[in-house]
Length: 273
Image (cartoon, rainbow, N blue to C red):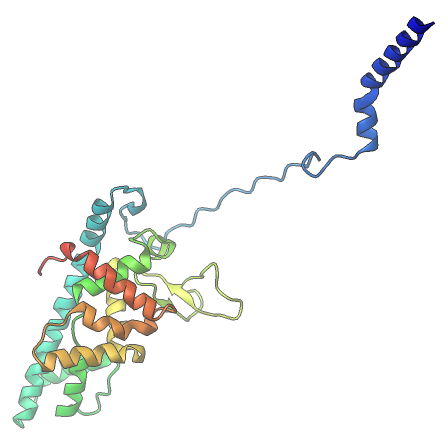
């Protein structure tokens, strides 16, 4: 009798073991991890096409830091040098005109035409050329130290790897406000209307940056400091001008400090013109 009971128990346990998975599945629903979800249709990744025809170096593929920096500086530097050269020529025109006005000499038609072009480009009042107006113009028509321009380009474009640099040749983070003038930032607020400007050439981007610094009221402090250095016959050093760029970034003073650190750490790349 005892043997039969044991056999019966073994039989019942075996039956329960075999049926347990089916009972479990019926009693307990699948968890969220176990639920079989339908596959979502794959969405092809849209590759953003450049808004220019310039062949850029693939800075993101350069793994050696020193090589990347050198390649970036070699790429941007000629355009910065060219713009500063043009500004020096414009300053020479203004300085000659100023000297003649101070000596009560009449300006020639050729001089007047050049002055008209310079005043118009820098958005200055050109109703009448006087000693005072030309002196004011000289505060605007002046160089931007090469190391300052290069460091802002490196900072704003992440050493040439940012979307705005690659797609729109915008190495300086410049905005524009006409619809379709550039690229819409992905994190732009719904209420905002600005775009990040797009350029057709690197020279155009550098030229726009120089004009922005030399004309916008937000950078008046930079221009005043530069004029002060000129008046005292002192070198126009980049780190003496950076405080005038507080308004360039929402980061304010932290941005200025970062620029100064970048200038100091990369001074070996700044050879003389």
